[in-house]
Length: 180
Image 1 (cartoon, one colour):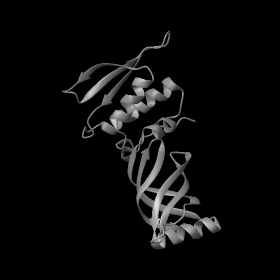
Image 2 (cartoon, rainbow, N blue to C red; image 1 turned 45 degrees about the horizontal axis):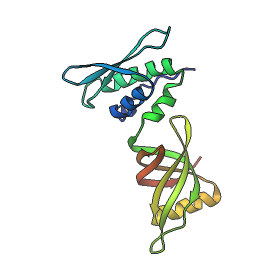
Image 3 (tube, rainbow, N blue to C red; image 1 turned 90 degrees about the vertical axis):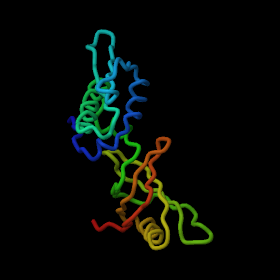
Image 4 (cartoon, one colour; image 1 turned 135 degrees about the vertical axis):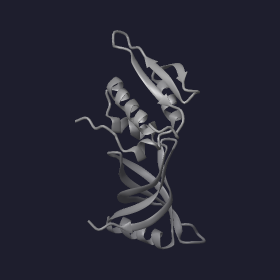
């Protein structure tokens, strides 16, 4: 089954520099710029295969930015023989106001001077199980300990960022034990 990503909110979070680095690393060549550097044309020629072309938007404020990113995912999916979801998960570096649903896998030793500490969550992000680290304090930290001890699912909203291929949930809010 092929999934096509069309959620404009998700697509708008993709940074063009991340795609550009991916294209360079996988053999694509930038062959031109259009509309006062609003976009870059990238081409890939593989042996006997047909030539592929991508129009990479370089400015987030373009009206069709999300649509162009969707087209890029479709092309890369065909070229790399991978799902769009798999490719998109590599491109996401920052997703504000993201809600995670998962379980607490690990609780670091709490701070000495206050009731807080780092926890590790196991959640599904773009159809893949991922480890996410976050910092919690006070009541949220106590809830995390309870969820960990009793293996209860949790729900939390925050700013999901990817740093060195690891996910971090910054500014966690509304941490709660989820009722199934």
